[in-house]
Amino acid sequence: MEAVLWIVLGVVLAVAEIFTVSLFLIMFAVGAFAAAGAAALGASVPVQALVFAVVSALTLVASRPAVRRHREKTAQTDDDGFGLQSIEGANALVLEQVDADGGMVKIDGEMWTARSYDGTQVFEPGERVRVIQVKGVTALVWRDDI
Image (cartoon, rainbow, N blue to C red; front, side, top):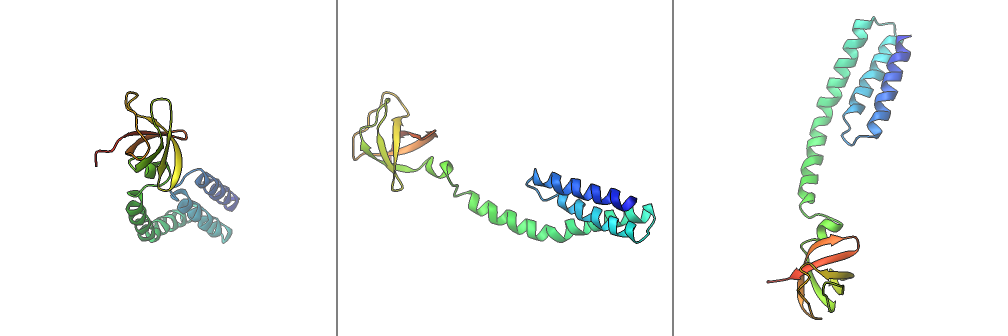
């Protein structure tokens, strides 16, 4: 009977892991399945709890170097940004006059609708501007002083 309870706990923890991104709960699910194995072999409840604790701790310790490597790799690539993060702060070339009502710019080879970040500024075709913010599919631009 205890084996079934450990299996249920393991499944619940594994399903709960689906809703997280930490891969933390899966370590305890592995411990629960190991405790279910101990229960199936006839171990007492204190031994099952000990198996659960030891296996969970070992999986946490064993996976720590891999998690650390992944975090370091992710931290290095996060500085570059992607999607809208990579567009904000980018330089753009004005293709059609940009003012408070609209216009067109080229950002990294892609054409974007644009508006002036400051409603009083007007940018003529050929000018260089900087993307300050992206709202929806419209880039809000400012005069590039570089």
